[in-house]
Image (cartoon, rainbow, N blue to C red; front, top):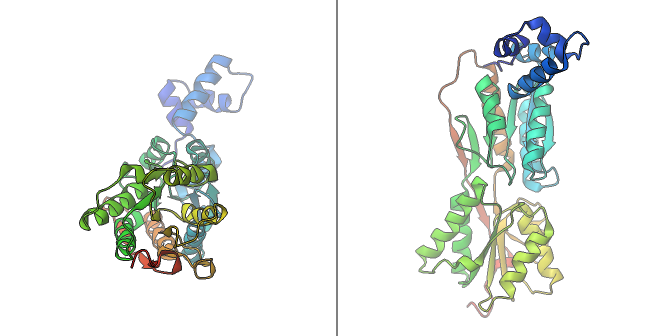
Length: 347
């Protein structure tokens, strides 16, 4: 499956001018008027045109380069996913180019654009928390660029996807807190836009409902940048602790939110779990040695990276158009440690 890059002929056909005129306009030749140059550049941008030398490489499918888009490198989850990606890519003869969005939609678009200029054969992407419009990916997909989503996925493009069982992980985590005697469980989560937010919120809500506990909307706090901005989490905690009916436990929905929440609770002087329990999604390898040891929902990140890369390379190397796609859902596991143990008030 090859990425059918836009050519100078496509631009010429679109504008009804010669390929020679398009070529000269793109080279800013004095032989072409400014009005025509402007039309050509606008059309090239609209069609997502790449320079011919790179487009040729894309057509031949011989760059052996995979583009990767994640939110940030300094995240336990994504670091482990990238390790999984590299373990397969290098073994199959591919190099990887990793970019980070810092949860910015505009930076995501820019990164994707730059990756196509590097003649990537395929793209692995986990969407930013700001991303709602994925037209920048749709146009590439329609041109034939193999794309595989992982973790934060979208249903707007029919392609392979690899995720964790977010609903079950959240359900099991919330159930563990309830069974430990906590019934006022708040949920600090990410942006409404992100697929994992919806799935984990649903798992949390179902667990409460199945145990006869009403969902309290005041206990659900959204961090629109996935916890990247610490003040978002600080504000969420302040709102929860200043409320008349304070929670007795926190279920946090992402790696960064979980570890930052633990730090902030210490900073605010809360004893864990005596004052408030904490259990959240995180793949930190330091969970056992934190104070207190941190109860976590573990995701098979390395396996996610491996599987997504295998699926992408199979798309790249397919000699026939691929019309059937698969969504892989990997199991999660809850590890109970000191941060969510029952206290004397919950026995």
